Image (cartoon, rainbow, N blue to C red; front, side, top):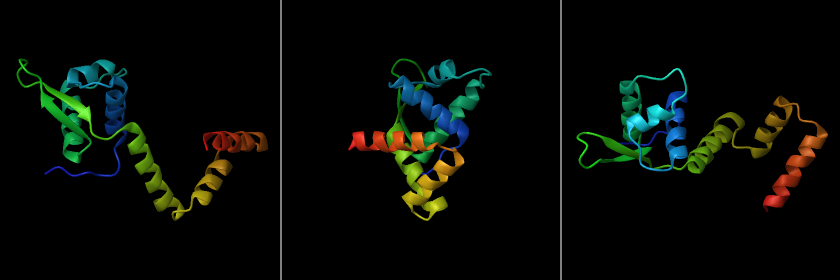
Length: 127
């Protein structure tokens, strides 16, 4: 049974990033070809693709004429995953307060007043 889970492990996220960057249906060999050194085993990549399918992040089709080759496509965009993840961080770590979350990052990153003003300016430009 397929179900969606909110978060991805580090390696699952790396697989998804490769698929998002490829921006086309891809098989395990395609993902492996984009994987940085040290390379994973083919079977490990195939397992991650299967897990991501089972979690509801990917769908696949069989590549006609190529035996059991599956071509995987993301069902969730990078932007959508980022949005969901950040909403979860805001809720779980900051009690749903965007102000608390921003304050935390401003303190943790030791932003200068100039950098804070630059951020505010970029937000105003987005509006």
